[in-house]
Image: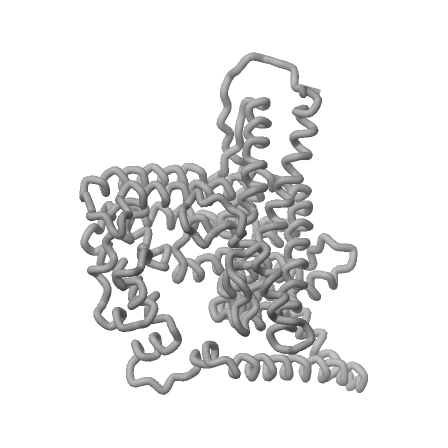
Length: 488
């Protein structure tokens, strides 16, 4: 038994469980998951490797008699303590139960959700403390992405041709997911295409783009990242994920301008050189690339325009901005946000308690949103759904008040300060991390305007990796114990 639990074996087990966690991230709604959070749609398969990884890490820390903490741990702790305080104060408001959901049930669910997210965060921090750790992690991450790309392209063929049976692909999807294949759209291993868009734009694009801009690769053949980048964009295109594409395009443009100016300058010099030297072969090569780019953009635009859900984005023939928002199916989310802000306005300093906003939302809905089909189903007497705000920022305002919101915002913004130090360090690896981190943080910031889950593994894992690779020395919590020889 002592040999089985030796430190080297535990370290190898930790690396294996961490790798499996990264590899299984694409599966968001695993069918065989205990309902620890109730009837939730967020059922990450990565939860199983996480459950195995955390005890192994804790046992290693007990043997070392110290545990590493992120440099910005104090900021996170301040938010958690204030969230606890708002939870206690929210109980004094004594809200009425909603559909048999009590205040204690809602807050317990919210805290359990947050604790799972934090487990992902600290695991990522502990397992990526060096460049060697990170390179090993990136291999697992790319392995999961490769499988996602293959399955996504198979779904795309099944959805758009008769070469592969769509019903067969849908049946395979239901072997591991609680939801079958979505009509016409590619969802990968995720519950829905928008979740796939989040995975690609937040978890995979940052590292692929950073590799291309900085020339940093974990492969002997550096074109591997380029191929993955192009194929991942193809999967995103077939998903029709509006949020994923908006985040991917906007963050790519911003990061390329901020962090890739040297690359852009080199690319322009390469492109313009034949124009000065009058080399017909080189001019033909450049013209071919331009043609491929223009054709790709034209094909993507026409492909997306064939689907009304996506084409509605550029249907501006509306009398009012609100009509446009409703037409693009964003009306309910806007209504949830308005209702959440009303809850915040009535309790601006401490909020209504962490996780309790859903008990207050129905009376705050604007009149116009009640007539939308989604909200009409929610307010039906037959419904058992508890509403949520669908915006992390508004949720934090409503549940933890202005102070809780700013404490979380300061914790999040502290990562930008760390990235700045990496970017100006002069180290190629750290600049690569800074480039990817900037993309990921921008993507998370945009995504959180329309999603409010605090379980969200890809956000917490990304933040944990960035915290682990921050040059500033980590904090350590140490304790005394009996001296004993490490098991060998």
